[in-house]
Length: 542
Ligand code: OOB
Image (cartoon, rainbow, N blue to C red; front, side):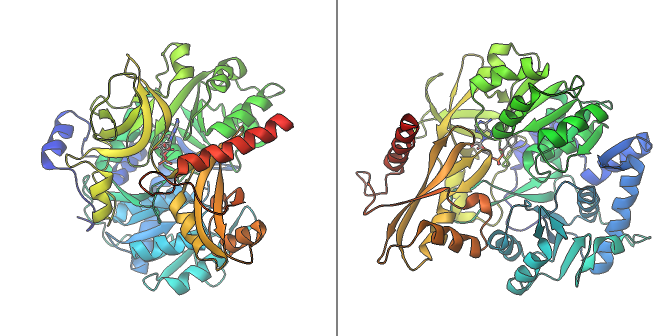
C-alpha cells in the first residue's frame, strides 16, 4: 500500500538492490513469525524480572493487532509512539507492523510542541504513551495534545490509563483479518535531526530497514547467542537498527532493556545477563569509562562497545579497549539511512581515529565542495549518499526535498567529512544548521522560531559552543527589545511552549547586532567563534 507523500526508490535501483540480494522481500511481521516458528522458546526480550520468548512476542503482537483493529486502526494509519525502554514497545511495534499501520517514533524527551506537530502533520489516529516515566506524567501531555490534533482519536497508555485506553485491555483474542503487507511498504516514520523549523519525517520501508538491520548485524557478528543491552532510548534509529534491538531479533539473539543508562544500572546487567554488545553516545561512553576503572562487576562478556551519534574523541576512543577489554566500534549513521562504522577486525589505529566506512557495499558516496564538485581524497567536503538503505525523500516535503537531495537522488547529509585512502571517513564538521548535543540533535531554526515568539526578542541565532563533556552545547545569541528580558525568563518561556528540555539553550548571550556574511546572512561561523573564545577564556581563568 502506497503512502502518499513518500518519494519511492526508482524501479531501476529497486531492481538492482533486489538483484544484489539487499532487499529480500521480508517484512518485520513475517520476520518475527519466522523466528517464533524456528526458536519460539528462546528469550527475545528481557526487562527487569520480565522475560518474553519469541513465541510469546509473536502471540502478543497478534493479540494487540486484533485489539488495535477493533479500535479501528487500519493499514496506512499513522500512530505516534512515545514509549521508553519497556517490553510493550515491542508488542506495539510488531502489532502495528502486522496491521500495516505506521508508528511515528517520538522520543520520551519530546514535549507538547513536538508531539502536537507529529500528530497534526501525520494526521495520526492514535498516540501511545507510558503513564509516567522519569517523573513526567505523559497523560497530562496527551490531554494537551488531544485538544490540538483533531484527527487523533485514541490515546493508549502502557500503565495506569486514567481517562484513556489501557494498553493491557487491547490484547484481544482473535484477529479479524490481517492485511497483505508488502516489503516495499513504508513501515514507519523516523524523525530527522533536522536543521529547519520543524523536524522532517523519514519514511523507511520494510525492504530498506531490514537490509540495514541485517547488514549491521552481520558486521557486528550477531547470532543466537548475542545479548544486546539497550541503554539509549530504544526508538532512536541507532539502538533500533544499527544493529540494535531489531538487528538482535533478526539474528535470533536476546534484547535486554535497561531502565537507565548509568553504569550503576548497566554494569550489574552486563554481568547478570552476560551482555555481549551495547551502544552508547560519546558523553555516556565517557561516564562508563570513568566508572569502569573502579568497577567490581564482571564485564568480561562484553565483546563490542559501539559509540556513535556524535564525534567520539580519539583520546577517549583509545581508552575503550584497556577499560572494557572489548572492541570499540565507531558508528556514524543517520536516520535517513546511511550507516558507516568501523569493522571489528580493523586495526586499532583505524578504530580509534575514524568513523568507519559505509555498512553496505552498495552505498554510493560522494564528497563534494559547495558547487557539488567532487573533492580530492583527503580533502574536506560535504558527504552525499545514495544506497539501499537511504531514503529518496522526506515525508510530505516536496519543496524541501528538492534541496535535500540531488536531482539524481543523492541525499545531502550536511556532514563535512574527509575520506582516507582506505575509504574510511573522518567527520570534520557540519554544514547543516544543527547542534549535536552529545548525540541529541537540535535544529537551530526550530528553537529560533520559538524565541522569536517572545515579545522581548527582536532576533535570535543559535549556534554550538564547545563542551568537554557533551562535545557541543547550544548558545542562543539574542538581540533584545527594551526592556531586556532575563535569560532565565526566556528559558522558562521555551519550556512553557512545550519544547523538549534538551533543545532549551544552555546559554543565552544578549547582543546589539549580529555579525553578517558578505551576502548579508547572519554569520553563524563568527558567532561560534565569539562564544568559543569566551568559553575558552573562562577556562583559562579557571
Ligand atoms: C544517528 O542518527 P541521527 O539521525 O540522530 O543523526 C545523524 C547525524 C549525522 O548526520 C551526523 O551529523 C551525526 O548525527 N553523527 C555523527 C556520528 N554519528 C552521527 N557525527 C560524528 N560522529 C559520529 N560517529 O545519530 C545515528 C544513526 C545510526 C547509527 C549511529 C548514529
